[in-house]
Image: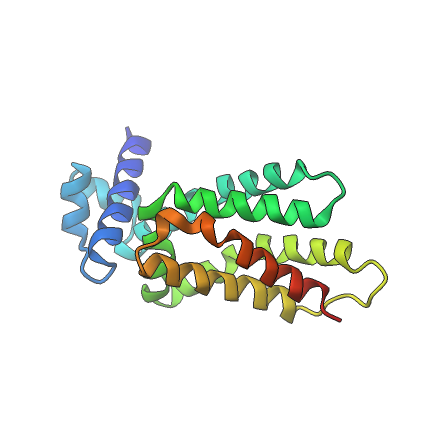
Amino acid sequence: MRNSQRERLVEAMLRLVARRGYAATSVPDVIAAARVSRNAFYAQFADKEACFLAGCERDLPDMIDTIYAAASEAGDDWTEALRLGLLAYLRWWQERPEYAQAYFVELPRAGERAAAQRDAAYRPFLDMLAALAGRARPESRPLGDAVPRLIVYGATEFIASEVRAGRATTLESSAGDLFHYTVTLLTAS
């Protein structure tokens, strides 16, 4: 029962935040939408922020697995691995437009803990890009930490602008531009 209530609360939080915004979403709104009691909410979460952050974090392991599975189909071709992984990433968000709205648009507005969680969520992407850079530049000096960060933060802000503009369901159409941007930065000397 508790897991079911937790899931309903997280789903309600993400849905309401996507539609109304983080600031305009209240705990009573989430409780009503999830059809649980106030006690059930506070048995699961300390506050609104904790519920929202749990929702934003919940599916990220699935996304990472999806990216790795897609990229693994490329074998040793790092550019194909990047292309397939990027397509899987964009498609994953495209299939979840409300989650994309909550994550890309509202999470940055939710305070310091949210910013810290989002920064921590970037780690797998930074590691992926560092590994790709090693494959892209086997004879060159290794990239510093700045280039993968520029790619991740730049791509994230680009995707956020697409979501804010109402284009969450067409993110895949940006794959070519994001691929070119990433390859250019990874291979620049």
